[in-house]
Amino acid sequence: MAQSRRFTLKRKRRESMSIPELLVFLLPLLVFVILLYGMLAWTVYVSFADWQGVQPTYEFAGLKWYRTMFSLPRFQADIVNNLRWLVLGVIPTVVLALFIAYLLEIGSFKGVETYTRTLILYPVAMSFIVTGTIWSWMYQPDRGVLNTILRGVLNPIRDGLGLDPVLGGRYITNPDTVTYWLIVIFVWQYLGFAVIILQSSFRTTELQEMIESALVDGASRFRILWQIIVPNIRGGILVLISLLLISALKVFDIVYVVTFGGPGFASDVLAFFMLIATFQQHLVSMGAGLGVIIFLIAFIVVVPYTIYAFRKWFE
Amino acid sequence: MKSKSRTLTILVLVTLAFLTVAYVLPVYVVFVTSLKTPAEISARQYLIPSTNLQIENFRTSFDLILPSLLNSAIIGFSVTLLCLLVGGLGGYYLSRSRSTFARVLFILVGIAVYLPYQVILIPLVQIVAATGLALTHWGLILSYLILNVPLASVLLGTFFLAVPRELEEAAEVDGASKIQIFFRVVIPVALPAYASTAIIIFTQVWNEFLLALTLATPRTTTIQIKLAEIKGSFVAHYELQMAAALITLIVPLVFFLALGQYFIRGILAGALKG
Figure 1 (cartoon, rainbow over the protein chains, first blue to last red):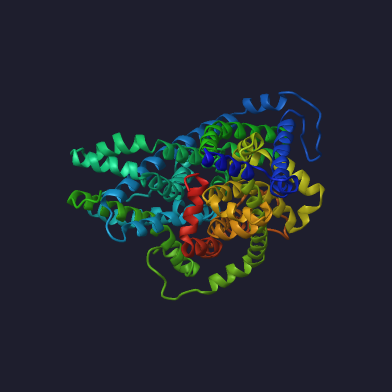
Figure 2: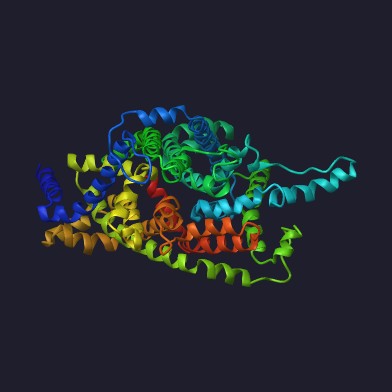
């Protein structure tokens, strides 16, 4: 009894912050959050206005620019490309990361783990502009690294067999495949990040014990991965998928620096089109509308994730 | 659950070999190329290092990007410091208060962490241009600050959650105010958290492209913009492009190699698993 009373007293004291204290801790953050959401509301309003050209106009125009936007072939192509990014940027990354993380867990020997982590994690420190600059040259069809190596290795063999020499892939100059090759860059860059997050969810004692006992029961390694590990790290996988989805949605730097949306607008995405519409075509209201669409897609991903984080935080 | 099965070992080795090629080859070729002459690059022996190392390539690129390196450093350090201050205070509030207001604020901050920059870009350009901030580094510093304070709050707050309350209670019994407790008790314990957060924020700002592209003026051009510019204007000079890419990469890479543990902890805290 006495103990529980002391406990409540303590709790009460910890809860209370005086007004000046509250201001010091809270005010700076609050100012930035208000600014941020203020700007968000501003953009939403602009998307319903009729702002073309350099001078701002805030005259209300309803859905005018959304209608224009939806009817544009470029917008429809962007939606398809964004879907490609969301599916192909995320699923292969998660599957590969799961495989690597599991392999490190069961088959690793001395030094392998540190080596692998450094090896695949360093791109996390790189910007998309650096990666894009490097990979543009890898992909360049004529003098690029990939095709040069491909020809160097394959053509002597084909020559010996009496076959015609190969030229190699067209990669980013082929409108049908360009988006896929850009996604490869993204997967390359995010794989290490994904492995780190999955590894940390592997490392709980409960899970390790479950795996131990499954091993004793003679379960195969694949079954352990599929039936014990995956269901038990659902939380970690969901977090990872959310983070990757948001990153894949926001990708714009890779497109900008490698293809500038081309050939034509074959590799265009919403995030890139937003920039072009706003600052090149000066269709500011439509640019704002594109921003709102990107935000809404991100919102669908972010809200469940935020609720998950909220539960962990206030548990 | 280590195991000594032979198939497993072979699988590990094959995977390692594949990853090594995929992750070393690009950087190796970039490095080797950055030290060649254009004529040597035309010979297309990309895997073979030059015997006649062109250190000047780095000097040429460095001279081209030095002003923007300085701009990025000024902006990166200012944003990081201010983010640590504001994010630390806000994160502490979020990690200690259980009020409804704190809960609502957490949701707002949590969504703000992942806000696509496109959705605030137009007002931001208006504000920065109208206030004249665009002409100085403050335009970009303020913009990055607005966008990174939520992340800093969540990262630091996640670490503060793990700071034992007993420490604070002891100080409270001695009559210290919350502010004193925060600066004298919590911050010293949470210094590694500050290191992690600083690295994450700095790298993010250093690597950012979209805002820099729309807000930077010739006097405040950041390193990423400059690199994209070099890629565009020295199309055939792969040696200069690659040298510039390496210089751009060096700062975050040094952080990553020297302070890898903090980096990883920051990433995990960002994924709310710290």
